[in-house]
Length: 188
Image (cartoon, rainbow, N blue to C red; front, side, top):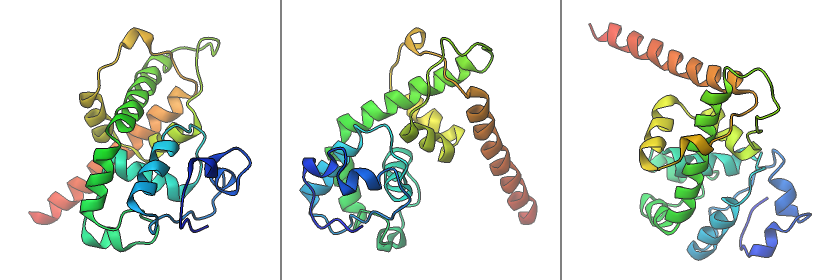
């Protein structure tokens, strides 16, 4: 699906775009005008059930950062045409990014809290959008987010499947450490 224009109604429940957000169908939005890209992201950041890999890739780029070389902006699945547009859109989305980061921080604290709890009665589910962000995030990225926001730890409920999410984060950190050590060993 290629988006040439976007209005809020395009995300109404039952619309083709809304349905595509829970599918693996590629959603391309690179050609949207700047103002419509900003509106698209403002609306996307309100949704918590996103499963679409293309949209999640672009959300991850905004939230977690990543390689910002020119070649990244040449990719069709990246919605930004240049580093300047990327930075301008991030500037326009400051409030939405902050709210998203707060939710990530709350879920992360909830993962830690839920790790040792056996009963699921008090635990909450991590919604699809955030679950998918945790699937690609690492401890360094989560740490950066925690340093950007202020949250009340007591108000963070424990989350279900905390063990799986925490182990996933640990494995990514472990793999990164092994790769770094191999790289450093090769430099000797």
